[in-house]
Length: 253
Ligand code: SF4
Image (tube, rainbow, N blue to C red; front, side, top):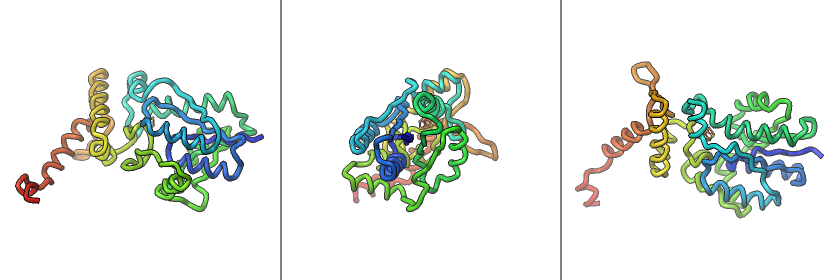
């Protein structure tokens, strides 16, 4: 019997993909393959547990054992939007090892939860997983927006992961090194303690490497240079103080 293996990230896209796979093939040979990056929001595991119960199966959880920061230390490279070694070490490699040990390329299909706006990622993902076949159920019609997927989850009685209240993705507690300036501004606004933790860890790595490295970059006078989370925070706080109404007006209001 063909195995149907969903790369189950704890995000809404991979859940919706698993729903479509289950609707089409049943759950008998369904595998929910989750990579534990040791950095997830605890509510991601609540969602994985509740949705797995809904399917009536136990998820398969694989883990490298390190978190992204430990990977950066080990490979002597701080991940950023262009290169994120954490993804390779903590997600791709553990999942690949599990698939190689447990799935026959001639009798297994992998599924990834990209939606129709992410179709450009399909060729690279297919190449990366060869010789296994990979399908993308959420790239099939009817196309669903993220909001529609979140509502679908609510409709079956499962509250979506709480991170979606302010973040686009439910990964690494919102502290993804691939994210840009705007996302990190949202982290500062919605999860200031997590931002502070990431800022501290970035500073530790800069000190350890003895190099001017940062997760973010900025362009100044035509040149690209690292922008630390500390500096990004200071600018955001300065901008927000500058746009706040004067004290007298606040009190009057
Ligand atoms: S979600 Fe971001 S930080 Fe976490 S492992 Fe993937 S690329 Fe790295």
